[in-house]
Image (cartoon, rainbow, N blue to C red):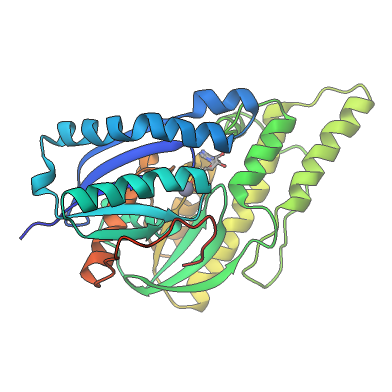
Length: 332
Ligand code: KG4
Ligand code: ZN
C-alpha cells in the first residue's frame, strides 16, 4: 500500500509543507519564505520569524493539500522537524503537526532537520549505502558516514563557524543582503582568484575551521579601505570561495578514500553553491565516485526533505507519542 506523508518544516525562516509518497515521490511542496522581511535586519529575527509562521502555517497546509488534490483522509502520517533550529519557529510547526495528528488520528514522526537535508538527495535517487554525506548549511558543516538508513557516524566537522554562516558574515562586510551565499556564489563565478587568503585548517584531520578565513577577509577589506584602495568584490568573492570549496572537497575526497566508499551525497543550503557542485562533479568523475546533489530548490530549507526522511523513520518504527518537544539543539 502506498504511504503518504504530510511533512511540515518551520525551523528557521521558511514555512513549508509537502506531501511525499513512499519517501521518494514529491506530490506537492509549498515553501513560503520570509527572506524579504528578514533581509532588512541583516539576518533572521527570531520573534518576527515565529510570528510569521503563525500567520502562514494553516494557509500553507491547505495550499499543499489543494495542490496535491488530496484531503487529510489519504494522508498516512504527519512528519515534522522537531529541531535543531529557532525554538519559537520550531514550536509553530510542531504544534501544527501535533494538532493535525490529534484531530485526524494520524501517527506522527518527528524528524531531525539535518537528517532531512541528507534525505533531500533521496528525492533525486534512492540513497545507496554505504555513503558519505557532506553536510554544509547555515548551522552545520560536517562529514557523516552512513552505513544504512538512519545509521549515522560523525567523521568530522567544523570547530567554529559553519560554512553558510561564514558566507553570510563575509557577505555582510561586502554589503550583500542576507542570505549572502547565493550572491557571493554568483560574484565568485565572475571574478579572479587574486587575493592572498589563508587556506582554512589544511591538516590531516576531518575537521574544518572557517573563522580564520572569515577574519582574513574582514581584515583585508578594512586594510585596503584604510589605504584608500578599492576592493574588487568579485575577485575577493572568487578568492574566498576557492579557499572554502577546495578544503571542503579535499577532505571529502580523503574521507571517501580512507573509508573505501564510492557514494557521496551533499546536504544543506550550501549544497546549492555552484563552485562546490562543479568541483565535486569534477573530482568525483575522476575518482569514479557516484555523486548525488539535491535539486537546487531543495538545497535550502523545505518540507519535501522532511517527508523523504520521515518515510524511513516511519518504516523503522520511529513513530512518536504527542508529548515530544521541539529542541533548539540536538545531535542526530
Ligand atoms: O540549510 P539552510 O537553508 O538553513 C540551515 O539549515 O542553516 O542553509 C542556509 C545557508 C545560508 O547561510 C546561505 O547563505 C547558504 O545556506 N547558501 C549558500 C548558497 N545558497 C544558500 N551558500 C553558498 N552558496 C550558495 N549558493
Ligand atoms: Zn537547513
